[in-house]
Image 1: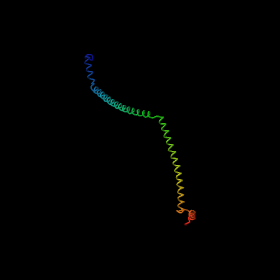
Image 2: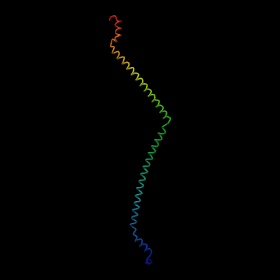
Image 3: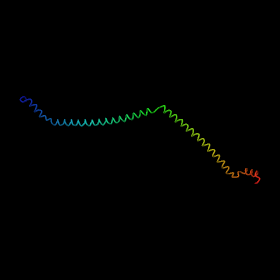
Amino acid sequence: MLLDEDPATLIHHTIGNFNIHPDKIAIGRIYESLSTLQQARDLRIRDAENALKKLSRNFQTLATQHNETISAHSSAIHASQIVELDTQKFRVAKAASDLEIEGERLEQELESMREKLQALDMQGIEGDQATKAERELEDPTM
C-alpha cells in the first residue's frame, strides 16, 4: 500500500499530520524572549558603561589633583618651614620664661614695697618715736 501511492503525496500527508503550527508559535515566543533578553542585556551594558565612564572621569580628576598636590609639595621647603616654626616656638618659649621670671621678681618687689608702706603707716605722719625726738631736739620752737 505504501508503494501504491505517489511519494510526493505521502510526504505531503506526513507533513500535514505532524501539525507543526504550535511548535512554530513556541519558537516565535522563544525568539521574542531572546530579543527581549538581548535588549535588557544591552540596556544594562550601556548603564554599566556610563557608570564606568563617570567613574573614570572622577578618577582622572582625582588623579590630576593628587599629582598637582604631590608636585606642589617640596621636601626641602617643608623641612625649612619646620625649622623656622621650631625656631619661632623656642623664641616664644624663651620669652614666656623670661616674662615669668620678671613677673616673679616684680611680685617680690611689690611685696617688699607693701611691707615698707605698712611700716610707714604704723609710724604715722610724724614718724617713729626716735625720729620725733630728734626733730624736737633740733627744732628750738618745740
